[in-house]
Figure 1 (cartoon, rainbow, N blue to C red):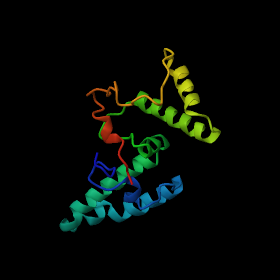
Figure 2: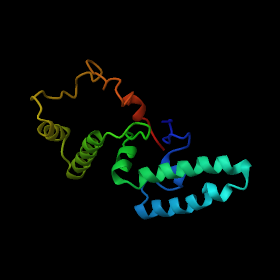
Figure 3: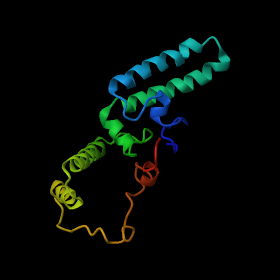
Length: 160
């Protein structure tokens, strides 16, 4: 995925659809329909000089809509964790969606980091090892490996 978000070399999905980050589902659908009609490849088929550009833009619009219209994918995308080039891993998506939901609840309730950690340990059945926020975070840190997810650092970049 490129630095701006889309996998087809475009800008972030919000920019592709020309909407704000806080757009409602209705706003997303309206923008998608308008742009899909404008850039549909069948409309440009008679003009070979723009047919390729129309197809590319239509694919970007489709991709942006497929992510932003799905609340789960949109949350992952906004958090910088969604990569359309990776194969679907529903368990990971469910886990991350639950974590995002918990973090949003913590913000709303005013709970502390320790409370979130306690909830996390309870959820995964931790071994009682505590988290020291003063500890050097890079020491002993391991990556997720080189499995199908690739380099997790590439997913944490800013989107828009």
